[in-house]
Amino acid sequence: MCGIVGYVGKKRVVPVIIDGLKRLEYRGYDSAGIAVCGNGEGLQIRRAEGKLRNLEEVIRLKPLDGTYGIGHTRWATHGRPTEENAHPHRDCTGRVVVVHNGIIENYVVLKKKLIEEGHKFSTETDTEVIAHLVEKYYLKRSNGSRPSLEEAVRKAVGQLSGVFALAVIAVDEPNKIVAARNGPPAARHSLSHPRSFLSR
Image (cartoon, rainbow, N blue to C red; front, side, top):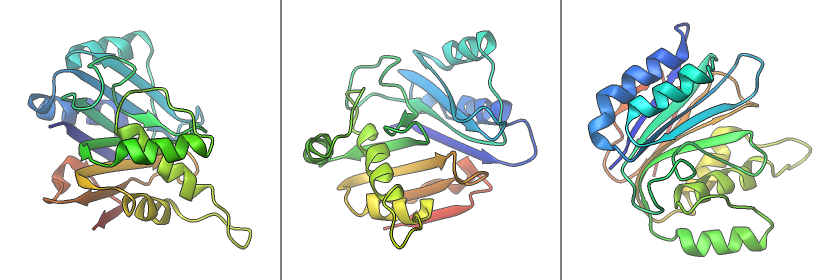
């Protein structure tokens, strides 16, 4: 069980996401993290082991800001409850990030295949597989154009087995959060102003 928050809008993104994570902290005390983009600094991530107050301290020491972002509070299922395993997780390029609730049952098989294709992993989690799958489909050009983030997430989700909800943002598609689920509905109220919502 984990908590996911996303925000796109005119308010300051970090306080909105932190407030959302406080409301969902009961869903995971192992670690917390946030990724924001949209202020010209690229994709910025802050993560911390333990309770949400530890993440707040990391942000106080190293502030970040943007116009859209996602956050996560974690109850560890795959991988130890460490800062490196805290969400959000990046792809190889550092341009796509994912937060995830649930379990990807076939992540070991997918991870092995992605490693054979040249992807580099830095965590023990099943979630990082999602980031790399999105990257694989997002960067694949056809007729000189790249698929949309929605298309890439749809293709990645098509490869996943399990019950899950996830949210994805990318540097190259500003002010957009793509959310997807397989299984019970994701709580839409926790994704403020979602631009895209995919379902299997």
